[in-house]
Length: 463
Image (cartoon, rainbow, N blue to C red; front, side, top):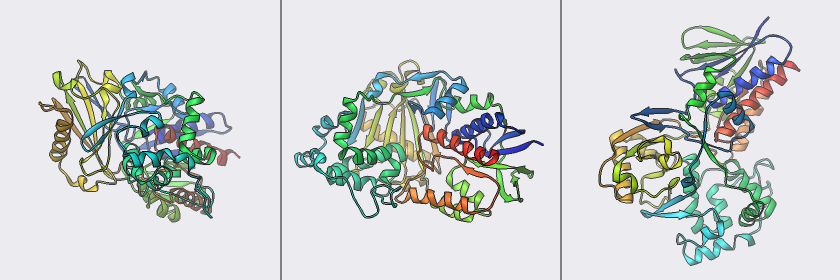
């Protein structure tokens, strides 16, 4: 008799879970079917690419960094052509009070820049003399749930002035979040480890440079990032049903009973829930309320992505580079700007400039109520002032993500542990979770979560 594992969600986490599950169960005794359900008509989740007049618009992730083994495996299975970022992407900028400052990867050089006052520089350069954090609860969430915000960490290590300058841009570029609320050990675990192992972030970074550790390489799919999930779907050795969502889950003893949006009832012997946290919370509310309640506490703020194409003389006005992050100093409504055509020149033909502007996030929720025209006006107006554009963009596009990037707030590690404990404590058929809200928001982290979910379910089912 054939048994069925159902994966709910066709983003990178779900695709990774389905591919890994298929491989594992193909090697096991017995007959297993892997079925992936995706509510949207297309696979990929927030990995979205569109094309118009020869321009590629990335509405979600535009690249990945030196992929981990799980993502690398998916890239290989997909057969997509991979492009390396242009050398121009090494140049990164910080916008402070309407002025661009180029950033240096060398921390000492960075601290000697004109971004900080003399007093702030002295305090920041004293970072190696600041002892590692200690508390009765330990200095990491795994050691008694000690925690610290990103801003508090940077202020403790480098001083309040440096933290005020860099904390917000650091988290805006990755989480579109609030540095006062985000957990340093959960968001940037390598910094927490660096402090423990070297007693200093500067010493740790200099040690990496001496060891020859290079800046990770940005890569992308040549036809746009959505080509990765699209091709994975086309080559999938398992079944996929798109355009159908799961409206309810109930436990039928040794199996799951799924109610689908088209009215069908579907049985499953095991379940991998690879949806965003909010959707997972709704699905689990009736069967594992403890896990559902904890998942419901994970927020994902609204984010707007404004894409702008400039041509001709205007395209030469922006400095070549990866883009700019913005200091939260009241001078700008923007979180950051990516120079897509500088990072990956084939994104836009004929020397045009392809800019992607991020707005909203946890620190500017008010922008969620702005119209597309208002968002375009804000983005165009600020870039005209910054770069001296004298003509409007030749193309523009606004993408809204009502729920964008999950926020790893203080206590996130404990929250995820509560979710896992609630699942273990409830008697039900095998079930696992995968997604970027668990232990990393990068594509590599997301793919790894899917593979781990499949491996855990396989271990339960074949033991």
